Length: 252
Image (cartoon, rainbow, N blue to C red; front, top):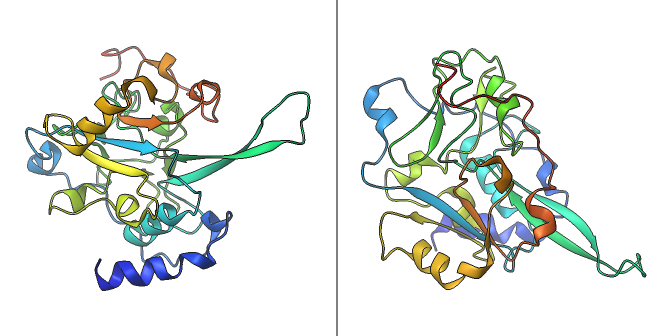
């Protein structure tokens, strides 16, 4: 564990359940992608996805803090966070509740509804499956924000363009883990290449096949963020609903 990581983790004892609102000084949100054709291709031959094991998530918000530091989103805006819910264990005794932690981020869908609604092709999907936003093209119309059924996008208050999780593509390209994965104290987040049959993520998906779920499967977006240990009640009833619906191929 390197010095910077130890320094970050050593301060996590001060983080509370409301840590998603801690002040983070923004030095200007980093551009999600340049306009070059090579940058749009991504890492050829790979298909990135993430597994989140909810049995290991303690709601510490280390992932939220790590992402905020790495990507410098404006104060109060986040590419990933951990939503917290209170679940009633027994309807006859409503005072008996249990906390449920649900990390949220862009799902990097195989059939992403945010892509066809973009009028300037600023939102696109790389060959490795990562959905990106080209800030040099984006006009801030927010169509993609409204089209996302996972409430995973926002208009950056500083750049006035669409912003979202990118799986820290800039880190993956140089062999590093996304900030949220690296800072997760419980090891709840795992990212990997689905095209590699020997990858850790494929092993996890195979070993937990009966317990793998995705958010809002009825949207048929083929999300590539998979959850272990999530109750069926949460798959379709979490906050986030697409305000724009498009037919694939209808909007160019």
